Length: 260
Image (cartoon, rainbow, N blue to C red; front, side, top):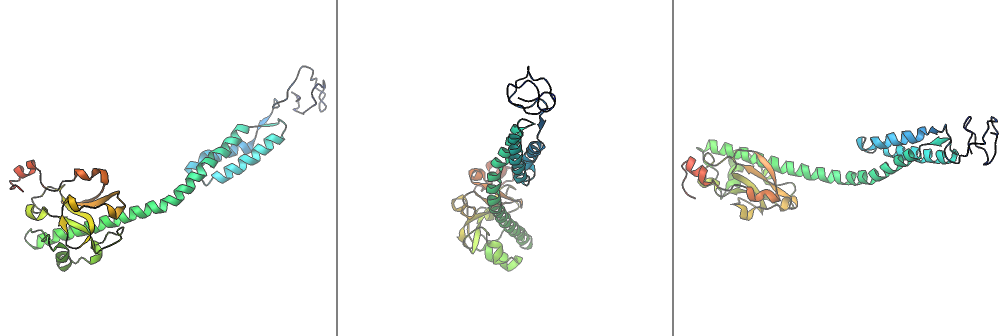
């Protein structure tokens, strides 16, 4: 039984408060004292827990510590402190977030590595695309012969064998192939969204189409594609069917191109 005047705890059934002599005859309380204060530790635990997702769980451990200490003091306060729910929340939220943070800490370096390798592969393709354009300008608008395009670009455009390697691929010497249709159509006559270069199994001077395209360099997730307008994009496996390997009928009619 708590005194409504001073908050002191008294034995059940007593009529006068032992601390201030207040009449307790009509009071019967066994829970939280009327003037109980909210635990500052519990409030702090809750605030730190709420901040945890925004601080990359830096405040998670302090939140749990404050919550545990606050909960302990509330239990020992004999009703003079409240905020048990706040303290429990301050413990539970970080407890749920910390395993997720640990998992992300493990996965993020691997994801960053995958992204870096994809970007490096794309940069290689971009360099090859610029070299093809330089070759075309130097040789009267002709595309490099698709049967020896790697050799020609190294000889005439200052590329090195490293430009032909996808960093994520396990083997070489070249992980790219040129679209077999580009030589017949010509760079100037090909649609800008037509495939110019794509990823394939290891080889050298390879040319072909979708039948030799490979996603193995990037664990089956997709592959980098160099388009005729010079831009490179990583195309997911489920979207590879939408690639354009030769001019469509409308483009051929517009540009007066022969049947292929």
